[in-house]
Image (cartoon, rainbow, N blue to C red; front, side, top):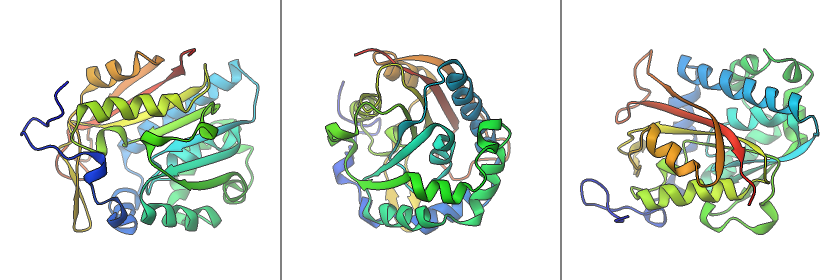
Length: 257
């Protein structure tokens, strides 16, 4: 596959200004309120993980959120199933923001937790902030250089990462493969993608993206995983920013190596 974007200008992951990522601006713009599209995604992820662990009751397991960025709801979805969760993040500014949130996350995340609490396993966590602080660690690193000690995780999430790190379809496919390579065979996962994203502004910095649709997402997952759920979510309140047409969620299980 040619390493060029549709417009002919290539921006690889290594070229983007990740350490200038404005975590506070990103969170305020995207997650200061719970949007209906995020709520729909959380409902599906919550139910998928709950169904998986009711059928496969061995837990707690270790979990990972790859490219955690400035979004906590993927990690919150892992809480009932894990004794330890790694938030793996390339941007130094995002990693610093995550460490601050681990100690006591902001009240703006409470509505997201209330959606998760519709399943009993989440209700069993009396103090989610304390549980989060006890189980979560933040590690800085490049997705394409994931260390061996972080492989064989028992559950994983990757939200708005693979398509949002460069304009290259090859890097998109490589990021999906790297994420799934962090999981043990049979481990459940949830991965979300911006549909047809043409890049995004955070604060004053422009970051690259790779335009993908549901078929491309499914094709990137199938060599490595069994996809149980693939859903596209529209924009009932309009886009949170310019330059994308919806969101795609895949839930499934890592195939045996």
